[in-house]
Length: 208
Image (cartoon, rainbow, N blue to C red; front, side, top):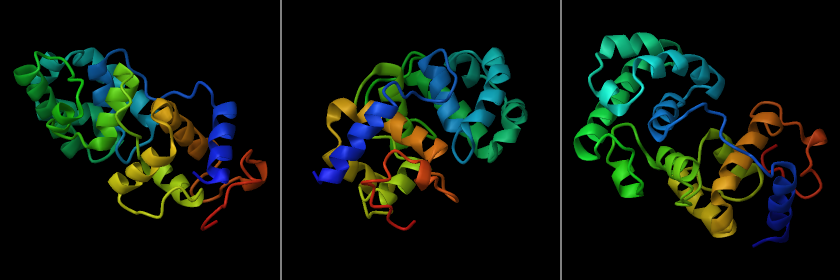
């Protein structure tokens, strides 16, 4: 591991020791639902939508019986609402029919659900169950991985593999939350606040 990479990880841990997901949820099913809704949508917007959605459909069994128009109406403001509604209802049906209404705890089983790719599966396994299966790679992680020199790949799965090589497995869950938090608060897409960043002395700032 490059020296600056070690320094970045140490500084992130110092500044975000208890980093956690920004989505509001009270069960693995709710986290699955919120994560599906978060695609190309801010967590803040998702958190505004989910209270009414969770009240109407608190379990996988309830969501499995939902009508698409009703779900679409409730999640409309998250964008891509028709596709997301299908994912929510069909994944809930899978949970009900194949997993007794419970969110499974393996990558293979999670990937069998409608609307679930590795990012969502890693969120569920890490945040809901404490299982370090990989690193969550969203738009923030992609951007920061390039800027910090962690990966030159464009494909999220390949970026994840690069990150898994340089971040100790015991830190995968924490790192996912920490780097996303840093991306939201400091290393933003359009105007990264490099002058105010705690990583300024050793971050390679690639592409900035």
